[in-house]
Image (cartoon, rainbow, N blue to C red; front, top):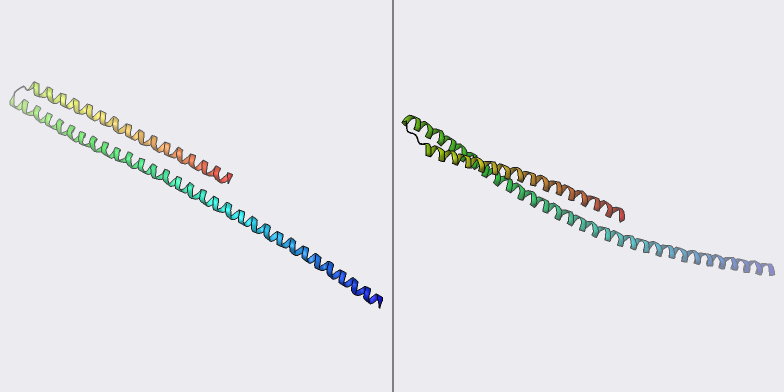
Amino acid sequence: MMSLYEKVRQEVLVHRERQEQLARHTEDLAAEVQAERDARKQLDNELDTLKRHRKDDVRRHQHAIDEKDAEICSALDTVSRQKAIVSKRNADLTALQTALKNLEAETRRAGESHTNDKFSLELELDRFKCDLARMEDNLSHTWAELADREARSRDRDDQLDRLHAINRLNS
């Protein structure tokens, strides 16, 4: 009888030890689950932060693009106005040259010398030519300014791209 008692007692001890092992294992699993939950929560927080940074980056990039678009539109408007002025000056110059030629022909036909009129028209023609040259200089200056703005715009884009890449690497 003693051996049966001893055997049952051994089984009870083994069973208790097994229950304790299972309890420890359960606690270990619960700790792992909690650690996974904490890690997941931290990752979710980091993801939210990254999303906010991305939205900020997108907003900054869009603002930069909008500014560049406005600058380009302004430069194109300036170029268009300068072209219209040059075109008008060219038309005025052509009309003046035509008028001068017609006047010279009339003067020859009439046999009269209108030296003063011719001199005035030539002065006016020279003035128009100077105005035209100045407007052409203004137009070339405007084109150079537009090219400079576009170069600065590209440089700013490159800087934004580098900062964005650095931001991604640091995140």
